[in-house]
Each structure stands twice: as structure tokens, then as C-alpha cells.
Amino acid sequence: MADRAAFARLYERTSAKLFGVCLRVLQDRPLAEEALQDTYVKVWNNAGSYRVNGYSPMTWLITLARNAAVDRRRRSDAGRAVQPIELDHRLADPA
Image (tube, rainbow, N blue to C red; front, side, top):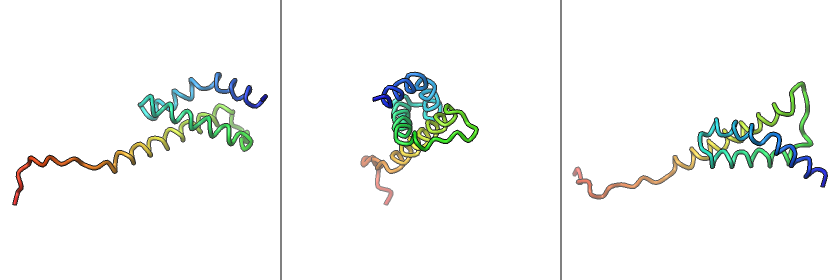
């Protein structure tokens, strides 16, 4: 239970800044919210792998958020690229 309480405090203290990072990359609120969720899922699943290596925890969190936003952008762009094109059948046949 202590882990959940600590995670809730982390979220309260960092979510506004990390949401701003996601929103800056994506320029779309719903996508930024999804990227923020992706970020905190990664934090929860990978907290044990965090290594200081001279960087602050916030640097690690910002990097995770930026990467989640970029990944979300790629998935969004890829989804748009494969959308079928509606043809206007009223156009005259050039033949």
C-alpha cells in the first residue's frame, strides 16, 4: 500500500508538468492524456530499473513523457496514413 501512496504523491507533484510535455509534442489534449497515462504505466512498471546516473528523477520522467508522446504521435499518424480514400463517383469517367 505504501507504493500506491508514494505513486499517488508522485502523480500529484509531476502530472501537470508531464502533461505539458505531452501536450507540447502532440498539440492534442486527448492524445496528450493518453501519452500521460502511458508514461505513468511505464513509471509504475519500471520504477525499479531507474538509475540515477547523474540525472534527476524529473529528467527521467520528462524523458519518459516525451518518448510516450512521440510514440503516440507515430501511432496516430500511422492510423491516418491507412485511412481509405472516399472517391467521388460523380466524377466523369476520363475514358
